[in-house]
Image 1 (tube, rainbow, N blue to C red):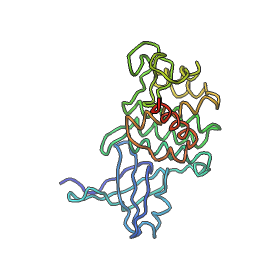
Image 2: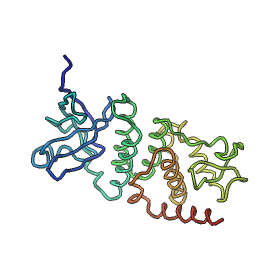
Image 3: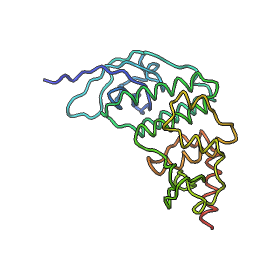
Length: 253
């Protein structure tokens, strides 16, 4: 008979406390995404262990009639306290929401777990957490099968596009575009975001004034390809506002 108890090691992507004092958590593990409930957890020792971004080892119990596993025990295996800093938390939260949206329950992907864990460590420790988040966002998307089209115009298929696509977050040719072309460095980043290693991309950070356009493109691409991501509201409000102004202008035209 199949055992109803299992041990898993994973990182907390989401955490919500119910009115009854239970903790609903979503973990990313090498075996895939896992949703579980710690009953009465907010009043016990599990409360401090099942915090957002914590790497925990859990013992879960699941009956055939219940889709939601129950956390019986949790052991803290690793934590990154610096992610609580305002300049890092928003980027870590975005990474967690990406992983939650991109990877499915029961979908075995040790590579996804390792990439996400590396993204959190980079955001926690690197002096430029924004650049880490930008690089790793494109890596996570590519791993899940969502790759920005850069070789040809996303509308007409013309080769060597250079202009931002304000609607889909891809790249357009001059004939289809309404916006100025990307600076050469930004275009090179988009063209090589998937092909280059993380180390290579991290060694060539873009200046701060070129990043908002890439965040806007990423936000639109994710919204169209994956779905709405709430973290944009706290991460890049200025960029999102500018993008919305652009879209309104395009609609009027």
